[in-house]
Length: 345
Length: 289
Image 1 (cartoon, each protein chain N blue to C red):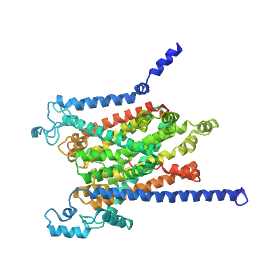
Image 2: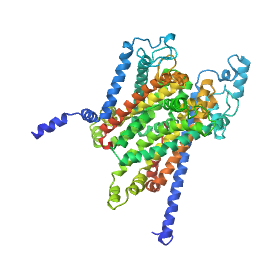
Image 3: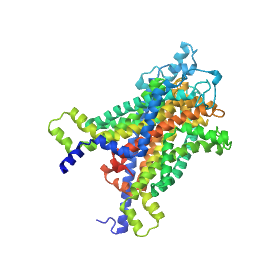
């Protein structure tokens, strides 16, 4: 049956319907985020709760008197039972209150926001560099399979996923800062200070993106429609970019999502080497100081970021692959698609 | 004649077939040989070394690689080669224990989730939550709660590695569950335990073995990272990540203290990755590109 009486109106009607289905799916995914976020909050809160030692001494120092300790307990509600403290913390989180830092006395959320832009900047720039290098190298390696480029590229990418980021960072500092003296080693005083950290993580990202692009492209390149495209005289560039690459993007987007999450959480190592005042380094420093509200808040904030990135990856899927979009019209199939988000490295 | 040939072919076990395919992969064999060499060097190397890994010698401190100290000495005059060899024992021990525990825990959870549908939702939501927290931060949180030492770091690594095994095992069991031989096993009255141990686990092992090698790389890199930020193995233990961390202050003038232990990590992880890739191709030849 044609909706609206003519084919044009029918097509429009179907597109609107499809859009509604996608929106419904996104709403469902957002609702599904909440229990996971609640679970992360419970786990992180419980881990900090069972930590031995009295937080009052972290605030007041080892020479605190029992009266002072009692006062702090009263102020922070440290004597309350576990469930009450968890409930209070969760209610606070829902209102954007992640607690107060023991060390500075400032709200944890403010402390996080002071450092978060540096970590986000590092993660996004590194991923961008990784995508540019990794996708290009992956496509060339797949198109020229078993060539010298492919073999060398495969070995370099294997090296990239085998080398710890902090070690790569130190090698780059040794080369470009100590030996060649062309780039600064530590700090964030200008754009040139970001080159080495971004290169460290970007090169690492490019290796995993290259591996994924190569294998995904190889899978597509063998399909019949690629042979058909070549047979009808389509240029190689068009065949690769319009037909092969377009259909190989889903796994590439997945790995990009995983990398951004990994960098938000794992940038701590590079932040430590390059003395970048980022969130990861702040969390590690807070563990050493026993500033647990900061650890809780920081982990929760990055967890929330990763959940949102997974959601965005899921949404991007339906824009790059119409088959996934059409699956949303079938509820059962949509649920199956929903399980394919990026996990966190 | 043809019958006897068929019988001969049948006698070749699945493991032998996989081994044959693996042997044809030069990269994988190079990885396996490198790993065996690293294992032997870590086990017996320190016994042959004339130096003690912990003995401080201030007259020989900060020496660059030379004939008497092949990898040089650190700021306490300790022989870096001996420390790397002893460190290999720690790294291999940590990796083996963590990844084996993670494989057992994760696979058991995945198996339970797939085999008993009532438990599926609970277990898989727990897995989702654990995977929702980035590995590094989860490890940091666990170590912060339990205390910074090797044992707690290993607990953290085993916990964070297990969800991946749970997902893989669950997916495998769900595909195996509907096969005819499972129906046949239950129809002849096999107990659940027999079905799980005799029919499901052997048929679900292939991707678990691949994840085992690739997960081992993650454990090596993650344990080095945690030790690097002071949340893992504590000094003076010669763990590779810790050695890099200790050499960071001397990078400008004595690069070998930090860079050489890093090479040990790279070589081990590289070899494991090569073996992992080869195993994946050998266990499922359809995946080989």
